[in-house]
Length: 426
Figure 1 (spheres, rainbow, N blue to C red):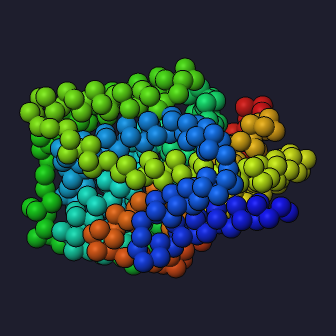
Figure 2 (figure 1 turned 180 degrees about the vertical axis):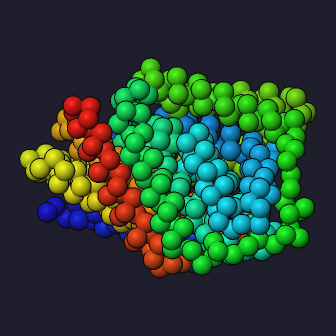
Figure 3 (figure 1 turned 90 degrees about the horizontal axis):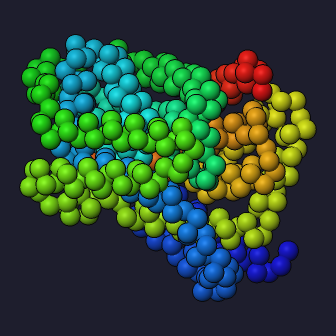
């Protein structure tokens, strides 16, 4: 191998490793950004190619900005606090019922606002509500983390990784639902029952009856109701765009900006605070990851991925899909699902892979991150949100849950995808 390729590989590997480990608590963007800049400075990737890699992510950036803006609107106007408060109030002193209600809210938020919204905005609201009920917060926090990935292929808009894998060729909504609806439901159900089993002791508790009055907040403010309406309208617009096979980033961003402007005028507040709350470093992080992936592609990563897919194509359909999904799912936790999604998506398109094998790759990308905290951007953001609330979940404590929950859900989802594929005559 050429020495330049070895140096490039070392820089990329160290950048991703430091992003996941975060030495001295330094934010992820500094490690990945430094790696991307080093590749350009040392001419390991041409500046033109780096610029092209950044430009390729435009739809993803617009999607993330729009979803983060809608999420901040919901947080600012108390929508998430209201949802978690209502769940706590209607739990009827049952920790198990509270868990179920929060899990259902997590499904809705993930489906309509993306898994990042569940991780970043819903998690703190859930933690605040659970603290008032004086029960162990861990089952509910893990519910937020795992449903953010388990439900992230219900719709194309449920995970930015879906946009990355399919690039500009996202299937129309009807085709998406035919392929992914049943596997999504199975993934969600298996994850739910796995968490209930693993936290059966904590979920056998009763909540504090004295906290009921504190958690009761059945009335949502008029502006909060408008935010809910805005989210519903955005979902309708995006589902329509998806059904027509259109890009989702621009309509997401335009909807968010329009609704933010309307609500700001109505409430006579400045939108600048909302804009400041958007995690612009996350956008920069994704852009830097695009550069790293393009650099890795230049030294043969895409070729190796293509070879692996071609091998899977020639295996028994069930075996090939299962091996591909688990290989991708585990690899997520080594390099994160966004960069892996870029490579896997390119490999799927360049080899013209279709049918069950192509479906299994996306399911592995979306569901695989439930193995560990390093698997997806959403899980990393969830961990950061917990740190801000003085809650600490270690890599090993997450892995103890993930090593059971992820394989069971992935096996069930791929099995369901196979049955669906056979029934549809694929």
